[in-house]
Structures are given as C-alpha cells and as structure tokens.
Amino acid sequence: MPDRRAKVVIIGAGFGGLEAARALRKADVDVTVIDRQNHHCFQPLLYQVATAALSPADVAWPIRHILRAQKNATVLMAEVGGVDAAQKRVRTNFGDIPYDFLIIATGAMHSYFGHDEWAPFAPGLKRIEDATRIRRSILIAFERAEIMSDAEEQKRLLTFVIVGGGATGVEMAGAIAEIARQTLAADFRRIDPRSAHIVLVEAGPRLLPAFPPAQSDYVRDTLMQHGVTVMTDTMVTKCDARGVDLNSGRLDAATIIWAAGVTASPAAQWLGVEADRAGRVKVAPDLTAPGHDDVFVIGDVAAVSDSSGKPVPGIAPAAKQMGQYVGRTIIARLVGRAAPKPFRYMHLGNLATIGRRAAVVELGRFRLRGFIGWLFWSVAHVYFLIGLRNRFIVAFSWLWSYLTFQRGARLITQPPGDTPG
Image 1 (cartoon, helix red, strand yellow):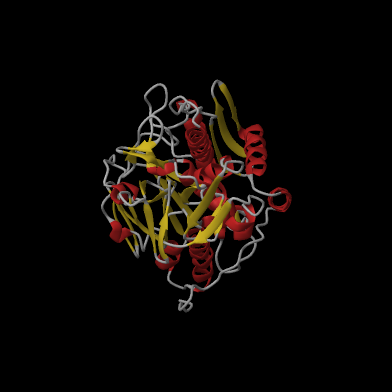
Image 2 (tube, one colour):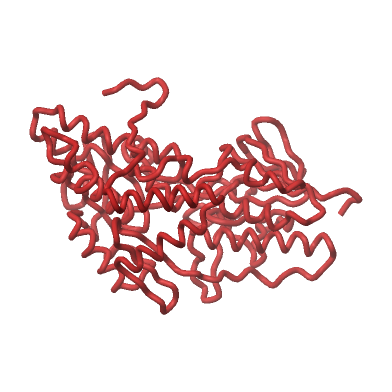
C-alpha cells in the first residue's frame, strides 16, 4: 500500500454500507460513502409509512447526520454508473472517484420476473418514494369509492391485492385490513370501509416460507380472521390498470402492491463477474468479487451461503454482519495481520407482524406468536432504529395507534406534475 492513507469507497448507505463505514471509524483510512439518496431508510418499517402509521421522517435519517462524528468519513450524494476495476475508479454522474478498496452494498430492486411492464400498476416497497406512493393509492381508493355511484367500480376501488406472501406481503395485508376495519370505519358516510376486499396472493404452498409450518398456519388463520382473503398456490399472469389476472381467474382491483420478488442491483455487470439467477454476485468466502481481491460485495447484492450451505437471507442483520466483517478484513490487510476466517453468518431469527396485537417470532427453538410476539417485535424494531428521537416517536405513535385505533400520517399528497383524478 502506498505511503498515504488508503481510500475506501462504499457504494450504498443501507444497513451493510453504514456498518462497514462504522467498522472503519478508527482505521487510518479515508472513507467515502456514495448514495443516490441523502438518507438511510429503515426498510423493515416502510410498510408502516405505506399504511399511514408512521411518517417518512420517522424511518429515515440523513446519512451525513449518521456519520457526522466519524472524521474519516465523507458522504457524497451521487449516482453510480459503473466501476473501472482495472483503473480502480468508481464512475459517477459527478466524475470518477478513485479507491484502494471498494465495498459494493447497493441492495436490491423489485423483480417482476421478466414482466417489467407490470411495474407502473404494481409498485414494490423499497424506498420512501414507494411508500408514499402506495399510501396515496390506498387512501385515494377510499376517497374515490365515496363519490362513486357505480357499484361495480366502487367494489373495484375497494379491492386491494398484495402479491407475495413473505414478510412484506403479510405485514401489508394485515395493516390494510386494520385501516379498513378500524381506522377508517367511522370516517365515511356513503361507503363502509369494512367492506374492503384485501387479497394476499402467494405462488407457493404457504405464507412466510422462512418460518416453521405451524407459524405459517397461524399467520394465515390470523389474516383470515381479520378479513383478508389468502390465496396460496396462485400465480399472477398479468397486472394492468384494472387489476390482475391469476391462474385461477381475473381479479379487478384499483390497488396492487408487489411484494413477490427482488433482483440485485447491477454490480455483477459493473465488475464483469458471474451472477446467480437473482443477479447477485457469487462472492468468495471473504466476500470479495471473483478476480478482484480489493472489491467486496455485501448485502442483498451478494450471493453468500451459510455454514450449512443454505443461502444467507437478504435481511438487515445479514447485511450488517457482512459490513462488520469487511471492515475488519480491510483493517487486517492494512496493518499486515492475518485475514479473518471466511465470513460466517449467524442467524438471529425471523420476525413478522400481522397487524394489531399479532406477530410471529422465530429465534432458533424459541418461538412466540400473538400479543407476546407483537410486543417482542415492537421492542426489537424500536431498539434498532437510529437515534433516541426516532425511537421515542415511533414507540409513542404505536402506543397512540394501539389505544385509539388511529393512524396519524393519513395525508394524500400529489406527485410533481400530477393532478387529482
């Protein structure tokens, strides 16, 4: 390494990227964090923004503020267009940025399994913008149903389809059911929001496949008790402005939410290396990209297996563990120590909420469900939020919603250039 401070460039300020930056806070390096957004988003709670329980500021924080005390870190808001691995430079819309070590933590995007034309009709939930768009769609559907005289169109407006039975789909379905049957129940005069039809569509045989079957069955039964129609072994064959086509027939709906799949960002293309079917880079045991020992790939964009050979899930704890590992590895290289052992993922468990007073928790052999599971889920999510202010606000918002059945972020805002329909 030259007689200058090594330059570490981190692309992406998600869970993995921020954890890597923090792991290098005491190292004799210059860290540059690049992200196209100026904020870090706590994605596990985005569905609560989409369902008006929380506002965007409750689940997102400026990246500069998070790293303000880390003197060796610089934050750049820029769009990355590629990587010149031969010249060791990151290409951005504001010029090239040189590096000695590169950490790619760019996450994943929505995957429509080769049908990107469905995207305008079935938004996914990855960013703040996605959450506010979905919130607007949900709330405006009730508003338009209130003024609609045609019964069939009113029924379509009050039909909500969630595609995908993983944690995001389950949480969205439960939250929308709560909005319809509790929050908005007394707010309208010409419609009964409780008549809303919420449909959760899953292509596989059961919901939450990462959980044990007994927990999946509990989730299905609880959702159905809340008025959600659960359709497993059901494929979506088309999405359009009027609804969805399923292998079992047509379902007219004004609001479709996509929670069925993701694909990695184009890191593999940037580096010219092999990727798996989801576009993730097939990394080495030390999380380096094939043929590039100075480039690390972590989080949702990395294809990693655990000690049993199973794929490491694309969840926040996994990304954070990878970020910590890469930080330690870079420090070891710089000071001439032996490199750490190959990355080993430690699974901390799975959590999912089904709405008010119900959640499932799986921590090895330790399992919870119902109200106790919901309490555990709530405490865990508040704990991992960034900053005392956000923890207090989120905890208070949840307590207020629990006691009053109200949701305080029910604002319908118009996107730039849009007009009310």
